[in-house]
Image (cartoon, rainbow, N blue to C red; front, side, top):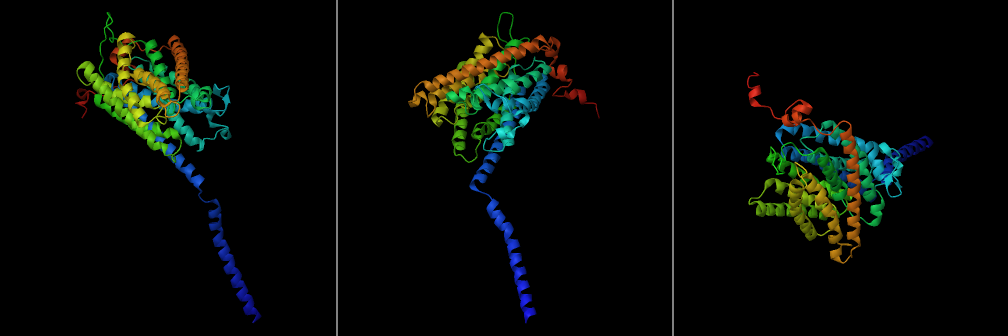
Length: 447
């Protein structure tokens, strides 16, 4: 009887022990399982990465636009510049630029710690540091590629590479710190949600300095100052590039929320879409009235002008405000193209200065008028308009000075312009030893 009782007790202990062992993982999971907070971080992280991938795709768009709007003999050079822009840009931003932009603030002017993503405990963006850095890195490279188009068809490849290093590691990050990294302009209340000034304005004014210093393409202007048009070789390629850029902009602007759990994503996408559409319509109509026919290249650039202009205020304005800002930008871009081409005699093959520099500045200042909170037209007074104007002036002024220093140094050392022979034959052969398009007659007898 006693033996039987002991066996029963042993069996009971084994059963209870088994139940406890089986329940332990469940209890641990219940204690350490998903929470609303961890789910939000996961969603935010996924959204930021998807948005970053869309921004990365914009580099394909820039490549297509620049190649399509220029001569076929320079296509390989343009491909090489754009591929190297993203490659050099992200490395320079990783090593130096990110710390200058988002590191602990020094006097509102610059960050100074966290180079090469070290000292990670200094940063807290609500999502993993790597995700935030990735998104910001593809932005930095976008700023540099704007300059490529304005200086296309006559600039040394080596000079452009040096320039990329400097703008991604110093110029862009310093201005970015002022506005996004806790610097003096952000403390004043300056609004540039996704980079009309930080990215596009800075790229545009640097492009202006570069195009001026490298000089116009041979044959662009006659001896008596008349303009000789040099058509691009592929409008379909340029159109594909614009549509890729428009698609990528839905990562560029809504992704700047750094949150996939905010309903603001939807309203930002709406203002982005409407501004681009409005500018496309007004640029098409204005070119039709002005030149007698709707101009395709100006219409395509008009779309980009509207997208650039709304980028600063995309989260701050209403859909109606977006229509007005985009619509005006479409016309302003054409007037700016004419000014730089015919009056200033600055040769910009793709219209980058007008699209990004002029319309980026315009869109940023318009936040002071159209912002739902603080805008002059909404009863906010003149303060925000003044801050926006000051911020644009300061940012573009600094970018212009840096452009003069960088291009001046390059011009005095390795030079920034190819020889007349290389320009005449095309940079594809002169700089890279290969053509983008093979002559069918040259391969007819291979087999």
